[in-house]
Amino acid sequence: PDSIAYLFSKLIPPRPEVEFGAHFHTTADTWLEKVETAYENGCLRFDGTIKGFGGCPMAQNDLVGNMPSERLIEFCEKRHILTALNYDKYMKAMDIAQEILH
Image 1 (tube, rainbow, N blue to C red):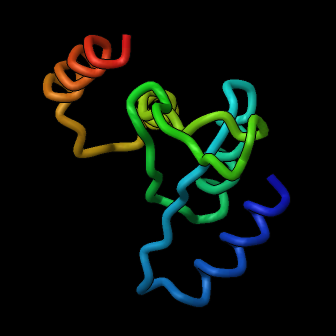
Image 2 (cartoon, rainbow, N blue to C red; image 1 turned 135 degrees about the vertical axis):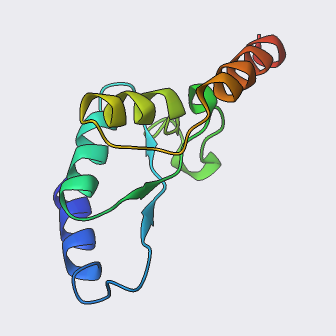
Image 3 (cartoon, rainbow, N blue to C red; image 1 turned 45 degrees about the vertical axis):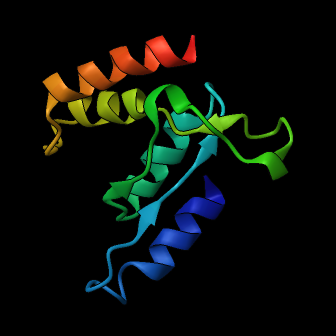
């Protein structure tokens, strides 16, 4: 969180015309602190993947996978942050991913 706070607090305020985003690799117990910290420091765009599929081969087991989209949606819903998400299409994509990934 300290690195994330430092990065976004130094980048975003002097460059409001630039849309900075976050692409986190994370574990189940550290996703929230990363997203909260980035959001609280001005980040409004986040990358995610269904069920966190994928990851970083160079991270070994430290950062298991990508940020799960469902966690980002949960974060936005709890804070009443509007998104342009089409929930019906997202749920269909979740169903398709379930078929493919399992």
